[in-house]
Length: 138
Image (cartoon, rainbow, N blue to C red; front, side, top):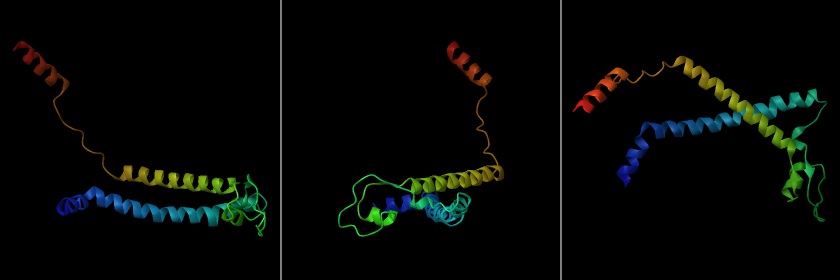
């Protein structure tokens, strides 16, 4: 079983996948930082100081022993209050769109740089029809 595992790990596509996952996770953090630290503050400035991360609707009752602010999304969430956090959702959607667009650009550029794979050469249609005709004659 150990030999099979070594053979599995040594295959190129498994190593490529592992590298891709690690780089993808790091790239996801970069895009999250870009969204949270650059894009959302600009959007906030354009919309007059609106902070999307704190935009939410309280759906459930706030516990009687809750002492924090009713405008603090993180504190309400930590207290277990049912909250519809549409601001966080908007931020996550922007993260996704940015990440998908950047990956699209990378794949598009890679497709331009890499040569197309050679077409499989096989018998032509005429050769196949000739072969079928000959086997029908037999």
